[in-house]
Length: 403
Ligand SMILES: [Zn+2]
Image 1 (tube, rainbow, N blue to C red):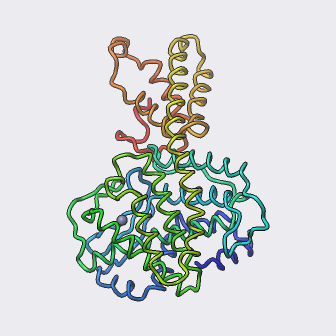
Image 2: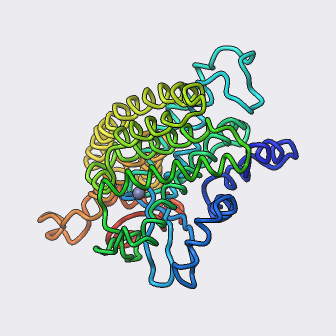
Image 3: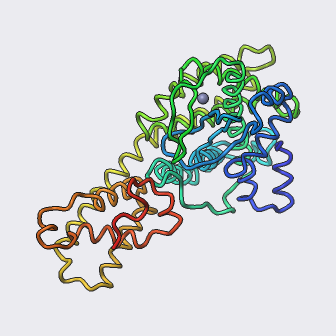
C-alpha cells in the first residue's frame, strides 16, 4: 500500500484501526504481496521454494521478533504479533514528537511537537512493550481510533515493509543455498527448522533488505527517505523488545545499534542526495533512542514496584483471610488482576504464576487445603478474560490448578 492509499482510505472514512491492520499487524499477507509485485526477481526466485511458496504468519511470541523458516515445501515468515503492536505504538510516540515529515497532512505549520501527549505516548508504549514481553506474549489491549494519525500509520507501514524485506533477504540467501537448516527452533508450539544463525547472515539480510526496499520505493515512486526511516523504526522497535528479553532474540541477531550503523552507511553510499533523505531518519532516530532509553529504565522499575505492592497485598490477605467474606475475596482478586493493565502485566503474570505453581508447603499438606496466597492468586485468575488465558505462556496450561 502506498502512502497515497493510506491517506485515501482514511479520507474515505475507513476506520483507523482497520487501516492499522492493513499496514501492519494481522494482515501481513497483502503487504508481502505488494512488495513482491514490485520485485519480479524475488518473485521468480520464490517459485523454486516448493508448492507452498512463501507465506507470512503472525504469532504471539516472547522470544522472536521475526524469523524465516523453511517448511519442506516452502518457507514461512513468522512475525511476532507483539512486534506489530509495538511498531504502531512506537510510531504513535514518534508522530507526536515530530512536527513535520513529507507526504503527510501535518507540516511545519503544525507547530511545536506536542510534548504532553508525546510523554503519554511513551507511557503507553512502556505498557505495551511490558505486555509484549510478558507471559501473555502479546498486548491484550487496544488503542482508541481517535488517536491514530496518518503519519504513524505511514511510518509503521514502512517499518513493517522493511522488516519483511529483511526476511526476503533470508529467503534469497536460502534459495541461493547460502543459508542452511541446522537446528530446530520452537516457535510457540510449532517446531520448525531454523536457519543457521550467524550475525554476518543478519547483516547480509539487512543489506539485501535495504536494497530491495529501495527498489520497491522506486517502483512505487515514493520518496527514498522511507527506506532508512523504515529500517530505523523497525530495528529500534525490535531493540525495545529485545532490551526486555535478555538472552533470547539478542543471541539470534546482532545488536540493533550495530545493524543500524551499517544500514545508515549503506544508505549514504548511493549517489543521490542521500544526506538530505537520511536526515529525516536521523531526526526520528533521536526520538527513538530517547524512547528506548526511557523504556530500559521504566519497565524494570515498573516491574519491581509492582512486585513490592503485590507482596504487601498478598501478605495482608494472608493475615486477614479468615475474616474475609467470599465477596471480599473476589473483590481483592479483582484488585490484583487490575495490576495487569494499570501497573505491569509482565510482573503481575510472573507473580501469579509463581504463586499458583509454588510447590505445596508443609502447612498446606498438613491442613489439606491451599495457602491463602495461592487462593488469592486463584481469585485474581478468575478475573482474566478467556482471550488472555488462552495466550498465556504458562507451562502447565492456561488455568493453573484452578479449583
Ligand atoms: Zn534476520
